[in-house]
Image 1 (spheres, rainbow, N blue to C red):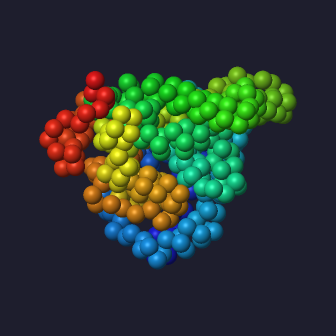
Image 2: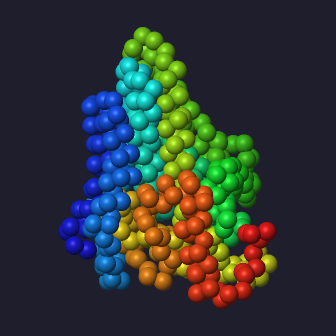
Amino acid sequence: MTNLKRFSFIVCFSVPAFTVLGYCLGGIYNFLTFAVVFGLLPILDVAVGSDPSNPSEEEVPALQNEFYFRFLTYVWAWVQFFLVLWALYEIQTGTLSVLERFGFVLAVAINTGGIGITVAHELGHKNKKIEQWYSKFILMTVCYMHFFIEHNRGHHVNVSTYEDPATSRKGESFYGFYPRTVWGSLVSAWKLEEKRLVKSGKSVWSWENETIQAVVYPSIFISTVTFCLSVYTGRFSWETPVFFFVQSWIAFSLLELVNYIEHYGLKRKETAPGKFEKVLPIHSWNQNFAVSNSFLFHLQRHSDHHANAGRRYSALRHFEESPQLPYGYEVMILIALVPPLWFRIMDGRLEDWRRKHYGVSPMETAFEK
C-alpha cells in the first residue's frame, strides 16, 4: 500500500472539523457538513476516479496487524464521543434557531451515523476485546448497540436471503424496508441472545443479555449528561435529551439506508430447504471510488468484507465481478429516498445480474411473493 493511500483514511476526521466550523460560523453554515458529504464528495469521486489498487496476499498479514490502522479507529471513537458531548453542551447553553438546530443535528448525525457506525461495524468484527468494546462504545452514542449482536451473528449468516431483515428485496422501497429492518434487527438480536443464554443455562432477563444492555447504557449515558449539564447551567433543558435521541435516529437511519443499498434484490440460491449457497462476492453491491472509500474505511468494498468478515478495512479488495453501483454511497443514499428514481436506476442492473449469474429463469425464493 502506498503512503498516499495509507494516510488517505485520515480524511474522515475532516467531517467533524466541518461540523465544528459550520457551528462556529452559525446560520446556514450549520449545513456545511451536509454540503461537503453530499455535494463536494460526489464531485471529488468523479474527479479522482476509482482506486485500482488491491493488496496482494503477501501484503495482507502486515495490513491486518499494523497498529496504525487500528489506531485510526480508536481515535475516531473518542472523537465521536467528545463531538456528541460538545454538541449536547452547545444545545444546553446555546440559542440556536430552528433552522440552525436542524442543520446542527443533521451534521452531528452524519458524523455519528455516516462514519461512526461504519467504524463500529469495522471494530465489531474483530476478536480483540478492546476493539469490540470500542464498537459498543460508539454504538452507545447512537442508541444502536444491538447492531453489534445482530450484524455479526445474524446478518452475516443470513445475508441475501429472506431470513435477513437487513437485506432489501426487489421492488421494496426504502420506506417499506425501514420499519422491517429496524424492528426485525431488534427482534433478531433478542432471539440470538435468548438462544445464547438458554444454551448456557441463564435467564434471558439476566444482565448478561446484551440486548438489555443496549437499551440501558444509552439511557444511563444521556441521563447522566443531562443531569450534569443541568447542574452546571442551573436549569434543565428538555432540548438536550431530545437532540441526543434525534441525532441517534438520523444516525441509525443512515445505517439502514446503507443496508438498503448494499444488498438490494441480491439473493443467494437456495440449495435445500432453509440452506443457501455460500456468500460470494456477487452478493453485495460495490463501488470503488477512491475518495468516498477513504472516508468510509473501504465500506464500499463490501463483497470482500462478507467473504472475509475478519479482514481489516485496510486489506479489503475490489472485485470486478461484484455488481457495481453507478455512484458512491453518498449519492445512492439520496437516490434511495426517491423510490421511483431508485427502481429506475437499480432494477435493470439487478435483472442483468440475475441473468449473468443465475440464468433467465426466476430464482425460487420468497422475496417477490
